[in-house]
Image 1 (cartoon, rainbow, N blue to C red):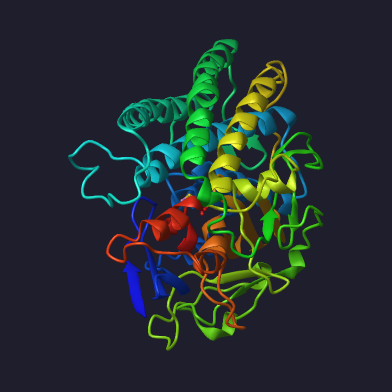
Image 2 (image 1 turned 60 degrees about the vertical axis):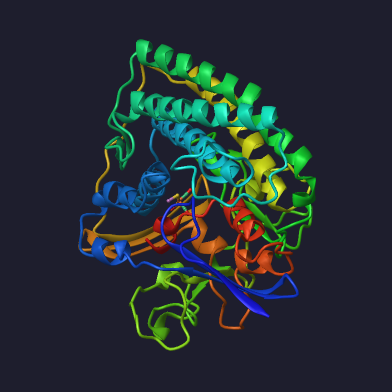
Length: 456
Ligand code: NFE
């Protein structure tokens, strides 16, 4: 019996601590802890509802656009209006650019370095050097692609900034539409970036994931977890949001039968979280965030979101599975595969959307803050399902709750004692070297956790 603790688990955003109990080299139980508190929900109280599209983007520099999108949708739902088609398309293009940069960042900068040897210098050292299976030539090609990916990620940001003005943290999101009115030259410039990034995705990213999957095919059987997958869906293809590039839905235990998402079935539990017990098992529409840093038995600043009591994985694999695009399996390697194929699917769709911008039509519809009301904004961030729940009174924010992807994936145990998705996925894996638990890190990184988002 031994306990292995990664604190912090490296190459992910924010401070995640993971502790695993092992017996004869196998993990018997895992604990995932978010080790910081932020309090965005509380600081939004009393603000002008329109500020939410700007403040919540500061939850994270990697996925700010998703927050701008969720906040705008929630505000527009609350005001019973929709933004015009041009705004929907421009928002999709900015969000899609943000997905491309995030997925490229995740594979090359965060995950791949757990399978290749970088140059013998920081930031590549120190590193675990166990279970390295690429030959010297392959290793060098992948290191070269790592360097190339840094440029591609920058270019994806530059592409987004053509419409967003700047990245990260754009000012382009306003309730009712977007503050930019693109010109034909902007669209041409965007397409030039998109062509280059698409070529990288097709010719470098997907083949590299395939090569990784060949050498590490055993990782198709590692890190499955519960097999429960949930997606809110993203990239609206019409104003009503009834058609999406990636659909809303969920499956239980690896099923191929997709069922509808009933928002009323979502609760955020807090038995093992450093929050006051008064908020246990509340729907986000009723949620409160009362920190309780000395609470006995608690071990994380993440709440534990559950759907009908079950722990659900969110992210590219959930989206691609629900949409019927990828159903090979649920594992570490399937997460990398689904993410790369999703990147390709989104890049293809962006090309179509670019030609749908109607330069003669409006990008904004006048918005008036209602005296009171409530709205829910559901979308996807690169790491998975994202929701904002807002209620307004006296034209100010009365309450705001944010439910992020990493909060689903890295949540602690729930009131019934059932582990969160990552905790479950770690159970049973073999650890060859307790001093260099690379298998544990690879499972963690397959979810692409972001703790800044998770605790928000
Ligand atoms: Ni900070 Fe975020 C998460 C994504 S959504 S990266 O989790 O993707 O708040």
